[in-house]
Amino acid sequence: MLKTRITDLFGIEHPVIQGGMQWVGYAELVSAVSNAGALGILTALTQPTPEDLAKEIDRTRGMTDKPFGVNLTVLPTINPPPYEEYAQAIVGSGVKIVETAGRSPEPFMELFKEYDVKVIHKCTSVRHALKAQSVGVSAITIDGFECAGHPGEDDIPSLVLLPQAAEALDVPVAGCGGFSDAKSMVAALALGGEAIVMGTRFMATKEAGIHQNVKEKMTEADELSTNLMFRTMHNTARVFKNSVSDQVVEIESTGSATFEDVKDLVAGQRGRKVFEEGDLEHGIWSAGISVARVKDVPSCKDMVSRLIADAEEIIDGRLQSVKA
Ligand code: NAD
Image 1 (spheres, protein in one colour):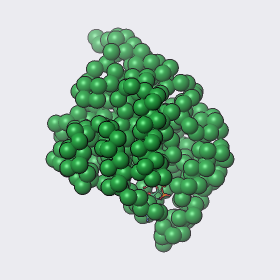
Image 2 (spheres, protein in one colour; image 1 turned 120 degrees about the vertical axis):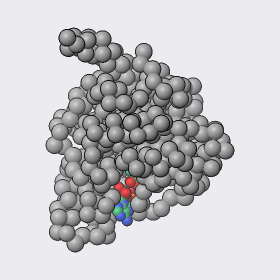
Image 3 (cartoon, rainbow, N blue to C red; image 1 turned 180 degrees about the vertical axis):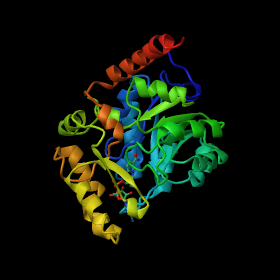
Image 4 (cartoon, rainbow, N blue to C red; image 1 turned 30 degrees about the vertical axis):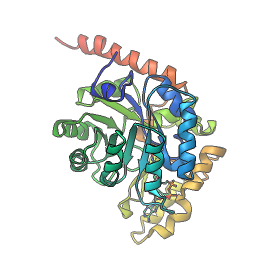
């Protein structure tokens, strides 16, 4: 058993969280993660309306009696969603754990506090983490540069960012970005982290509702398999390297590109089709550098059990044996 303040805070068996993932965080995956003793997180904006989110929360409850949460991300979008209504759907459904991301959670904190919701805020810098702590979040996920999706603009990898955050904050910190297996998990604990947050690793599981072609492609990837796009627009996104993300990077390299020049290539609805239909070159799809470490497509239960058993083996075995 690996116990930390985060396992206590969320009432979970293992210090492992499945982070929000657009077009991936549906009930089947979330319930499988929670049933495996980790914390599953539904992605609010993957549901077309707040009413659909409430239904998805109900569906998840039908598949697990373990704790799970909902991710609410506020970032630039092509069609801005009604965030406040999504937040209302979350509290109205009785969900008690929310992962906020993208922007300060401050506007939502009053509502979440009123409903006794524990907020874990995901951010990419120590200064943003301190701000979130000051408005009352219960925990922080610190996103290193290795992460999928939006790593921010500071480019600080987890090896430095996680201990910086853990030392600066009073609330517990989870490491995100680069974590995928027992080796990186033990490293996160050594760095002061009290859990790991994984997205990419959970995409390549049996229960993730994405096309088998995507999962197989992930098992063939290496550490050079991601692209950073939107660098010039200060909305950096780490995504899988394919012909579409290569094209976006090339358009941006002219130095004068605007979002309009790449909008049709990057639209989330195109990326969604990659996951649903398996055409890997149809659009943009997110992956972190840890995709290099994904070698198989197990069930969530098998993956999490192996992760914990191997982490304990590293702590009790290898780390003890190097001690003189
Ligand atoms: P979308 O189709 O609205 O946009 C596609 C991409 O373009 C996103 O990365 C978005 O941030 C970016 N973008 C949109 N407008 C922009 C602008 N004016 N300037 C610069 N960049 C811009 O996105 P979607 O796939 O429908 O996703 C909805 C939202 O969820 C987006 O904000 C996305 O970044 C975010 N997201 C959330 C998660 C999560 O885990 N919750 C993961 C990935 C992305």
